[in-house]
View 1 (cartoon, one colour):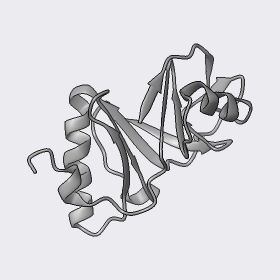
View 2: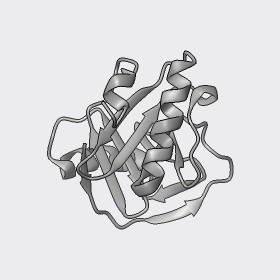
View 3: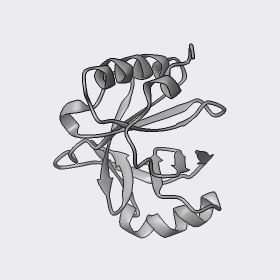
View 4: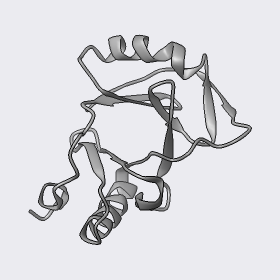
Length: 137
């Protein structure tokens, strides 16, 4: 997963986007990882995109199965880009998708846009293997 900086204007949405993912960094990442492992053990079909070097974890899945962590940000799809469910960027995400992919300089399937930050990486297709997510393995 790569990371870049970007300055946009953000506005509160009239209606929240349906959650499709959740993202966390720093200390919150460990809590999100732990709840993800619990949900996967209970049968949730979650997918993960992570960067240990940059300290980010994005968990994708059905809204009802998404893990929770205090301080994590829920994301929804907007124009092919994951953005916070409660806010929207200006210019709109649909106009930003291709420039963002060029900005990160690689072939990506997943672009997450947060205030001041762009995360990009391959779109995970398969459910997460708990052994690969567990930091103790």
